[in-house]
Length: 626
Picture 1 (cartoon, rainbow, N blue to C red):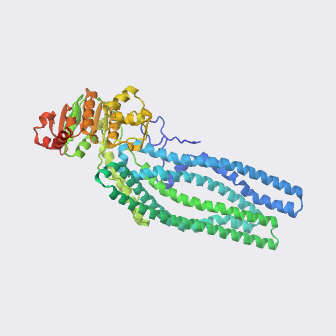
Picture 2 (cartoon, helix red, strand yellow):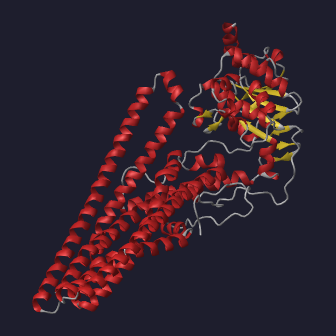
Picture 3 (cartoon, one colour):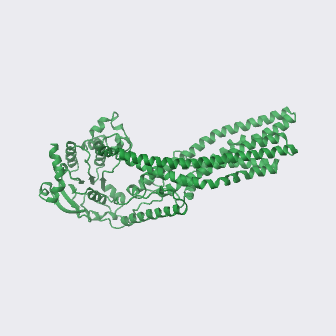
């Protein structure tokens, strides 16, 4: 039996000893069956406990009716006490199993919720930088938050519905033995009433899809705004992006209101039809008492069952509603979970030598081992693309494809739109696989990176760029995420990055808490903590992309000097135009249109016009700072 906290080994990333099968992503229904099947034993046990919890409501009216007929109408005190004792026992059993069922169903909910959240986490780890190329960040966050809660809610309503179904059939059998007309009415009422409301579920489904899509877009926008808040404040763009967020928020609110109206309509219809059923049941029972075919006790039994049957019918309506919401969430989850990494391990992998030269065929760059090489380019995107190639990362040249648009299309148009988006995601995935499957064009020690295991590439070559993240946790976790460093090594990395002020600013020191993405730090502090983490990893080949772009000149000078000293004898590549780094470089390479056009020492390259123009502004800024 799967218990809490859930443990899943789906989406194998090379770290698990025994990976479990991935979820079924063929259709939303197949995915939901897989989700429910993961804890079928726990759901079955919860359903049984629910059925026992409903025992007083299932047998109570029948026992009460018998007590009236045998004890009150029949004038037998002994019979009355016997039936009363039996009713008390049934109530006690129901109370006990009510507590147990609630405990179990909350457990199934949490297992479903956090199980989906863990699957999202494992998928992100498995896909790495490839996932943002295919799926918007907002959709990934929505699947991890709101959609995972829908999967948990589905397990709860399923267990409750099964328990209610058992009670419903039991009541129908009891009523059939008393009156076949009333029993037949009770038996067919639920499917007829639920079927009558089914036409309302289709517009509800469409509006919930629209709400989900606009909420996902709102989440993406909020994520982008928070990530670039410092930049927005620097350029005075807060009001513009605030207005954009306000418009998107209102759009999401309008979609939510529309979905809420239809959900209210469905619930109102459920209440109305349940009331109609209750009135019909009471009317028929009263007629049969007048005709003498039912006793007073049996009429009381029917009235009790009439009130009880409102519960199962409303539960079945709730199951239909949550089933619709879960289908919407499942479609979104499938768009994330069906993605597959483009990397395929070579049949005969070759071990890499991190102390050898690194050569990039596209640019003509050859990084000599054991020295500090600085790459200068007038176009930062070109040097960033070079860094991606050196680390065997796919280029960021595609836009992610959302699962649904926000135009609220329906019917065939909606299906065509989804099919078109699926084809676009498949095209991007095929392009990624084609790029990852051919020779990479970057060789370390004469061995193309495509001929080595990706894990070996990551061990030998570490790329720390401007998109590197800081996760919530302690400062120690941020510098040493794998827990391999001694205190002296961690302190040395912090000093090399000139990030001692971060340590000093935290009252708990190494155990001080950092917010997600280092939001409590300044831009320069966050950048230096990321640099300290890269230095602490101590890879054979370290590639740094604009590592000090957010710090002042004095701090940058200290960082450049300390990095050059610490990394002496190991291969280091830095992409920047800062003269403070260029002064310490053993070799400087100038890129133009993505290819090497000049190389040498910084002082010598100043005689080259193209090089001088690229670094002139940085030189002027350095002189002004002195």
